[in-house]
Length: 168
Image 1 (tube, rainbow, N blue to C red):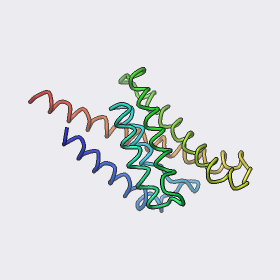
Image 2 (cartoon, rainbow, N blue to C red; image 1 turned 45 degrees about the vertical axis):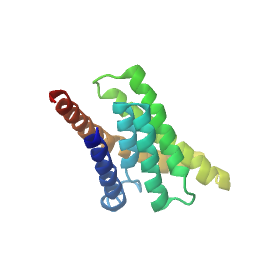
Image 3 (cartoon, rainbow, N blue to C red; image 1 turned 60 degrees about the vertical axis):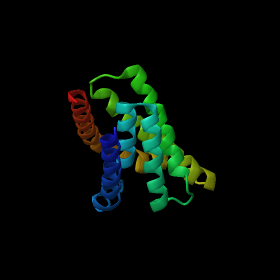
């Protein structure tokens, strides 16, 4: 149990460092993949509601400290998405790769909508379709492509810790 928590903390820090340093110069269509969101969705899907909620809160707080204009906005968004994805594990858990891809894409769309409402709509910027085409769509595609790799890595890591636990 402790190993899983330490591994989750290392994965979160690694994803944060990759998102804020390595992927910043590698922008495609002025979009950076949201690795922390992919980590939140993956852990929520693999481990359930509580893990999705806690890991989403931690990932959101990291982004709040780095980029947030208001402390807690990213934390609330990630916490909500992680909690909702955790419900999907209870209902739809399979070994297929299609559902995690759909969850990452829809979770990123929900993130973009939250972000649009709180950062743009409330400030009177009403060009919704411009944001969808130029901001949301590239980020959703980029995050989904990178999220597949994140999901594959984290699912193997989670199976490795579960197999060690069963051996003991």
